[in-house]
Length: 187
Image 1 (cartoon, rainbow, N blue to C red):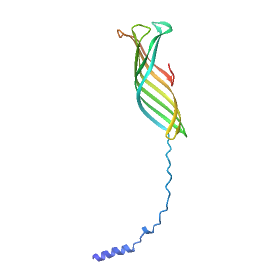
Image 2 (spheres, one colour):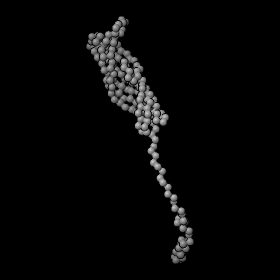
Image 3 (cartoon, helix red, strand yellow):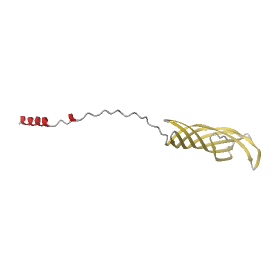
Image 4 (cartoon, helix red, strand yellow):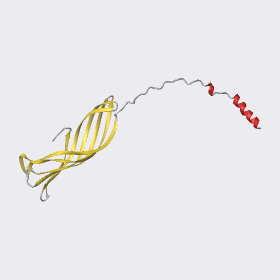
C-alpha cells in the first residue's frame, strides 16, 4: 500500500504543469528620482515663553488738591522690573515664497518699582505692571525651511500706581490705567 501511495504522488508531481518556470522575466524599472519635500509655513502655531523686563516710569504733578500745577512738577522716576510669562497664538499664510501672519500674545507680569517723591517730602511713589498684550502683523520671505520676516505690533499694558506716606503707610493716591503703544514707541 505504501508503494502505491508513493507512486501516485510521484505520478501527480511529474504530470503537473510547472507554472512558475513559465513566467516571463520582470522588466527592469529605474527607481524614481528623490524629490525633496517643499516646506510650507501655512498654519496655526502656539507657544509659551517667559523672561524678565523693565519699564521706566516717571511721575509729574499736574493737579494737587484741585490746584493746577503749571508747569507740571517732576515727582521722580524709577524702573519697574520683574518677571513675565506669556502665551501666543498665530496664523501664517504662504503664497509662493511670500509669508503673511497675524499673532496675539498675552503676558502675565510682575513688574514693580518705587521711588521717593521729589515734589512732596516723605511720600513714596510705587508702580506695578501685572498684564501686557501684543497684537502683531508679519510679512516675510521663505527659503524652504528658513523664514526671514519683519513684524509690527501694537501693545497694551495694565499699569497700577500707588502713592503713600512713607512713615505711616497711609494711602495718598492710587489708580490704574490701560495704555496702548506701538513697536518702538516710548512714552
